Length: 396
Image (cartoon, rainbow, N blue to C red):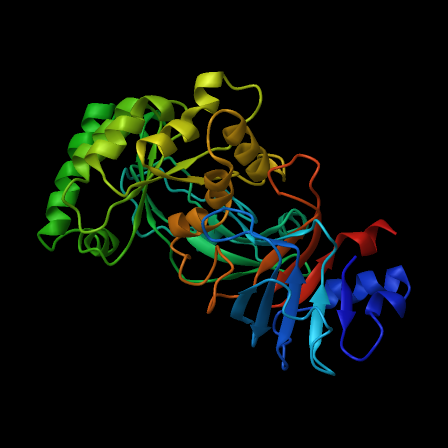
């Protein structure tokens, strides 16, 4: 349990647990932190994924104002200052991000009559008051990237959402990256293309038209570098095709591939320097070669992000994926970074989220210990520096 020193007793000491729970459920990040609040932790997840020693994080107006190594408030700080101290061993971590999400998505979220549907947006299927968001928040997620279904070669745009209290979510932006699909899921017997070769040919021609200034608006935006892209690849051959098709584009796309990641690591590193690959979710039932894929990508010099596929996968699937990747050869720092900063990069949110750095939005999670450990628990969740979830209040 954290201790708060602000000239008053802690809320936990003044209210019954049921009242505290109600207050937490009603808390909203719209409640601006008028005075700066200092959060003191014995360990903070650094942007590179390492666990630092003690640090003080100052939050003002919902954003991180400073991050200082050590406990600058060891003596209690100035009289009246807002200081929140976390238990010894607790880890202050950026909010988790699921970049492969269908949280709160209602209906099929697809249109199958056409192979290309760049005008479709996942935001149109969002139920912003779905119960999924309460469960996700309690598991430590503060943002998600919602996907359209993978039934079209150009499936439409994703929707980045911010997970809020009271089982709510709100759009961070109208549209996220544009989704391309290479694989059997985008093929139909009732319409072209009916084969992978046909799909590649259609997409090549559409991209060439977009680069020349024609075709659908969103595809033109992608070709011009104004809209990022995500390429879902079912097989290693699809990864190779994606690298062929998208070579020379203004923006390097983010690749999404898990099954044969170990086999494509060298090719991706050699043909797309600086590429980011989304892997996951992983489970202990998968073959060792699949579980080793993220580590092979890291060793090849490829940046990795993890996806959880909520709500189809268990709520802890992002952390399970990171833990398994670390067990099968990925460095612990890279595994933590894949859940946080690199996940934010994949979603196009790294300018404001994904790490505890000055200027970023103060959305963070307090874990009982290293989030890679299976026995680590989410203790608290903060949005814009306001506590919106306290697990211990609900446990009592």
